[in-house]
Image (cartoon, rainbow, N blue to C red; front, side, top):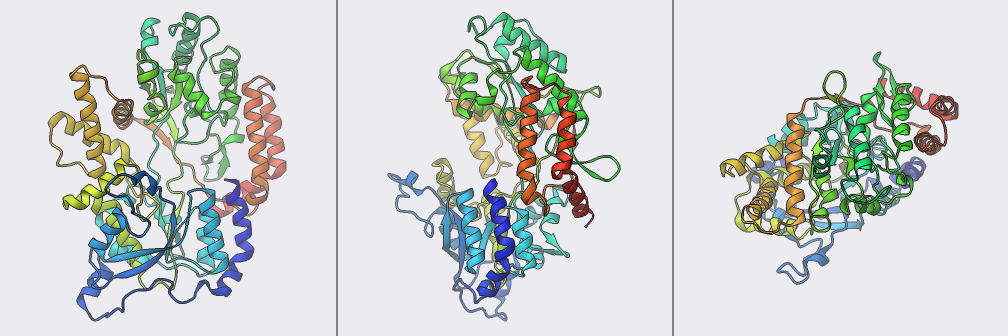
Length: 563
């Protein structure tokens, strides 16, 4: 987000002043007096689930919760300090939050974080949205070292989850051997998925796609044979996002077509010799762009994709005007409205196109994008690990208290949110792992291995399957939930080539030059794909990109990696 780049620049000049103004002041929360000789206090401060003998109060920087959805329910009147999650943590750990600030997720929250830092009013616990802010907080000695409390108070499950990322997540939050933040984990999005109208394929007598040639032929026949009955020239081609590619979890992005040709747009990758290069300026991009430009010229890509909004794209697919889009394992949610708008539609996922080795190549996304930090002078830095262990382990995997379980489940079903840490900690292969457990439970009837989130998916899927068996009309959400789960199982069973980018951070020159370079790149992609410029225009773009700061930034990225 642009605002993050502005905030980062402001923080660089304001951070030190903020620290002098009082960022290291007396503890902002009010806690009980600690008797370090008391075994109860010792246990609470050195174990994941030990309950404090007296209430510990802490301040929080919190993203806003929509408690209005609770109106008319038994939870009406709940607020930031008295809700299902605060009651749960009060009962389990004997802790209570007060909010130092609250803001809507996104730019509003980032502004509040920067204001808190500059003013010196840092809450005991808060989330920071990028690595640059985490680094600046560490360099100005404003946040607590969490190394020891991670060892003592992160549950075995939490540690196992972080281990599934091969240490990458924790490394990004580690400075000089000290863990300075609790990273958000970004579960793997898996390879891109081509979602197709299977009923259209059947009408056209088309086989399942594997290669780029198969995809090309299917899209061509959708236009020529018009299986949707839209009329000549009224069927749109492949629906794509005007951003084109580069987001590993982005819907409508034909990333798989780029990776087929060895191109990795918008990723910093290893060039094979240990040096980082920017994928968007590598020669492999040309062949991918040539393929996409050819498809666009023949109508195999939606001719109006440049001006489509998100709602427009969904509308094309759900109304039957298009029968193809690239998504991910949750792509069924993009076309869930087909259940009511276009009931004959049958959407099926395919992992393609495959290369000469028979595999799809994917690039992984940033394994973590935000961090939970603790104010340096806070008396109980272990609290953040205890909350994380309770929120992302105990409540999901171990909770047996039916009353507590019901409140948390009700909040989830009402979409109320309210959890204390606005982050997530889950396995790298979290969704495929969960889906396999649910599929196994649906087949066996044994739900003993399901955690709280899995059980919700299981119940929704079971209800959907029962409606089919009874000849009843199923809900669009039930259909989407079940089919997304099956798609995740498909991902888990399919062998792919994974390429891990080597850099996700920022450098000194990026703050000033990257917006211009991003704009240049976006214009190049659109001009070549739509035919405004020939494919050879790419070479001109690369030369200009390097001269406009790209070469300097590449040097800085490599220096950062070596450092």
